[in-house]
Image (cartoon, rainbow, N blue to C red; front, side):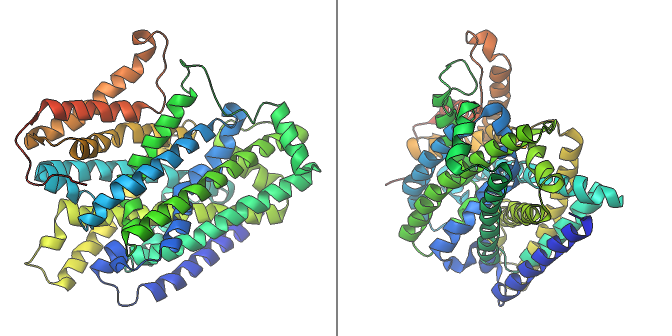
Length: 490
């Protein structure tokens, strides 16, 4: 597939997003930007969240990881499903009862301003790093297979893509993203299904024969029963559950879309439907990964050095132009949801949580919109720097790096919300930042020396749970029995 055609696909796709943005952003206000005036349709949010949750990481890292990890990623996905149930029936009732625009406002009412700012800051860092590495994965493929041949520097690629995303999110915010995510999810799933059929035809095997071949080579193995292994199934399922609770339930980007739905009942329905669909889509991505490796073996093609390069290498260099076109459409569909929602959510959180824009009575609506737009541009610039950094330090699987980063940055958020919901105690607010910074450091030390300390036990993605537990215990140390100003009640 020629680079010019790839560029044409990207530009055509972007033009379609601009058309959607034009119609959804008419008459937009700050309230539209932040929570879509609570008028989003639950089924659109549920469907669109699939694309946001999958992103370029799932599109390339999950299939690429099958060569080494087989179908073990399903252990994490099973945990995801359990986590979504916790979000639907524990966190969402809390958010809707308090009528939150930013979910971190709960920390302010529960623990005070310092805890509120601390939680919001950890979200900003977490989402910036997590979304940047997802965006990097997709842009890196476009750079290697298209733009390097034109001698276009990677920073220029990042700048242009972020500028394109700013154009269609700048005014409509969440209201626009709910619709663009729906479009992007459709294209991503279509690309996945069509690619599976194309490779099946290339291998001249039925689906039953494909599965038998995967099973024979051991790719279909899901559960790891070695308790000392990083992939031990109980650790993976529990880790997946808490990854979902934090990276979705305690994440402003993901919850911003959910709380834009009119009622709690519709939001819960959205979450349950979305989680079930996501389970099957992830299974299909793993199946695709398995047959990609069957294709490499059948055609005597060397396995790429980076697992994340397996899918793009086959699609763009060995399959038909139709398959390459399908891959590029899917890739671009994976790119934009990773970026647009993250930039919008970070803008919302910074405006509401850090600078208190909604409470600024000294500014009229137009002035507040001006501040929000400046923050929007600043957030995009932060993404530019972070993505370029990942280009410099990238050494392995992006999905592993993403979940590892989440373990260290989302852990304090997990501890803060858990202590607020499960405990009736108040805390010494000024010490909250100390606890939240100390917890990831202690977790890192435990992770580094776990084999020596725990009889060969290796910590995996459960660093998130350990981090949250240390934060919870630290908050207990600085707590007292004096009742807080606002208590969580059922």
